[in-house]
Length: 74
Image (cartoon, rainbow, N blue to C red; front, side):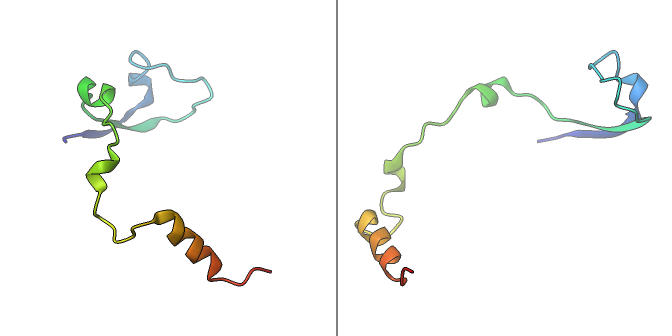
């Protein structure tokens, strides 16, 4: 992904974006990234089955209980 990075005078940005009156700087850094609407609107659905077999733990609930019981409780 390409981006544009430039330092500009703040007064040049007033016609493009709203700048609060208490923002008292002369120069600002502007970074521009391309907007791809399809990437912003699509969300990948989480499918747990795609991760099947990545761990050797057969019963995660039992593994968590075992780890919790390893330590002495005060």
